[in-house]
Length: 306
Image (cartoon, rainbow, N blue to C red):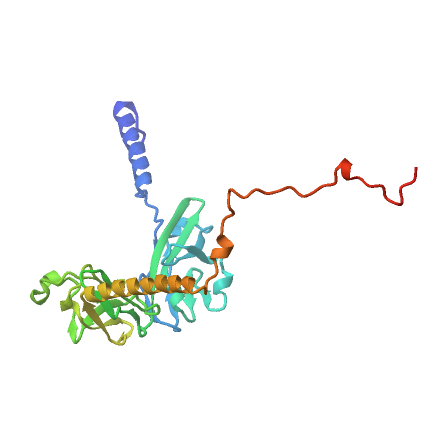
């Protein structure tokens, strides 16, 4: 159909405008989609896992596929580049069906996010995201519990498990009683002032009282295996020993007095003969110059020849 006249030009302009909009929005009929059927796999340590990646035909025959790994610290590295597995993964990762990855076994270091990126001359890079969780049961945590704390001071209890994956949840017990993460939500702990971080395992008492005395231990748990706990340790809260401090000061003064008396007595008995060495010369005493021979005292020596 030939479009002419004002009406025809209007339709043509609308078509061009809509074509540009559709192209900008990705609605021009082309499918530059990148997808995965394994968005969040979970697998036990030392077992295998597959990661899939597929893309639309509109990327064309020159489509370029890359796999990138990002660890928990944000550091990135290639797993697959230029259709090949990179050296760090060569012994346990393979490619199948052109775009998919197969791990023969995984370790806790493989925890993180994997991106399948696809690009071509006609499209910028599009990505599919795979979050891998390697399941590692918690180990016995290392706990730091002070045995003696002074009243009204800060007390910090620590708990850490470096091996559990996913990262374990930390719980603290006083005796056989579980301490709630938020004491304000429990009537029995409404007067408690501690702060508990279930992600880091830190239990902090900003100002301990004698009511906080007791046996404490930490427990770690995750979905990979049975929970573990550290050995309980008694934390005792004591008042400042004012009497002991006063007694220590008095004892120090007594020692100082005995030292001074001992030096005085030794000096008096002559055991410390420092006086002679420190005696100053008499300012009235005159120092005579050494005697020298004068002309009047000159005598001819036998060896003198005229």
